[in-house]
Length: 96
Image (cartoon, rainbow, N blue to C red; front, top):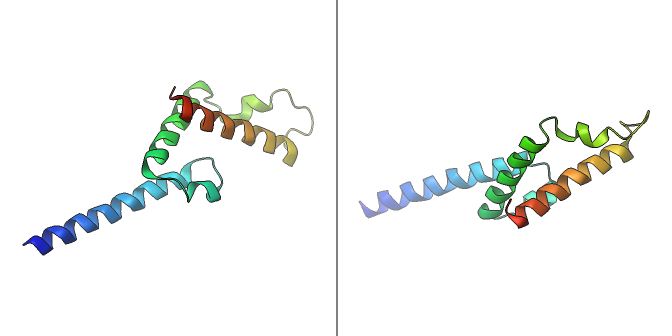
């Protein structure tokens, strides 16, 4: 009976871990960062990202408003992505 309970707990933890890491992969962060996050960090960053989406419902398009003809250039997109990343990381530390 005890072995059955251990196996059930192990299976549950494996499923939970799998879901946490799937959630981490959905964050707008490089995989080098998301692969190193613990569960609490994944939840904290996800919460911050969702709060950011309330503030910026159209995503990074508002960040590109000031750019002109080459707004889809890699440099402009990198700047917008960097701004979103900084916001997510900072707000997760501040606990908005």
